[in-house]
Length: 244
Image (cartoon, rainbow, N blue to C red; front, top):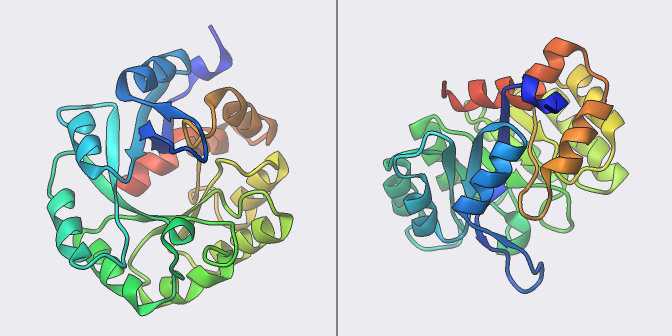
């Protein structure tokens, strides 16, 4: 038995498939499920540029749920979004401003936000790298679409100025949530829970780029109260995405 066996754990941010030559990592559903059993994960929200592979992985699944990964620069991306959001177990949208080279406040993102509002699903954004995914670039979109929930994954990533910026932006925009993977400071998890709200910080590990072995310990090192710890590890994600 390990300490994490006592908790309902939901990974808000995981990937399947090949990570590309830049990263040199990969993970596929069978291996992911073995890792989930080892660390007592109840569910993972998975994503990949290969949405069709993801659709096959989550079809009929109770433990794997999916975000549809979209590039707003693609012609007809709204139709593609609607197609996948109508499929089984797709519960959100993933946007990567850094890799796809757009700024979150650009008008091309508005059509994605409109579909998110139509389907009442959250959008996950990569957050924490210049020039395309700095925390302040998300605020105009959040204010233009106050009904759309937006998750800043990595909550600023590894730079303290960006981490602080992510907390500040979320603190003043109630539709912005933060996710913890890849952000190195356990103290900032606790600060975010206090300043942003104990219901708007989500646990994630960014598998296979991150790993439960250190992401769970980082979360525990934040020394949250028991109820807030439960919220962080799973309840907040479950409520945000609306699954049981």
